[in-house]
Image 1: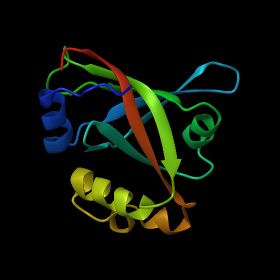
Image 2: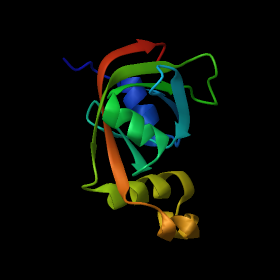
Image 3: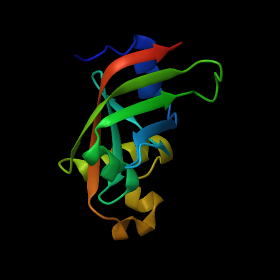
Length: 135
């Protein structure tokens, strides 16, 4: 069952290039954290990564994921979104360009010229099961 994201959190995710922290589960059960860009599709959250990165491998093995959203302009507010992830390469390049334009004002290849060497892009769709916090 999916959880609903509040209107305030939707507005933050849509209007502000806020960095978020993703938590995935390592093979030994320990947490693995990544700071990343994020987008929203309805109540689902979207993150971009590449094939072979630790978070991609962790999520293929165990799709449980947590996203911590803590806006720098309001350090005492946050949202923790717990859910499961699905991964696909479909739309991967489009998502990283959308995110890059949101966060840098440029297409990803213009922001990061080394991107031409990246592995195939992966869209991580996070389906929220529980949302807690003050946003």
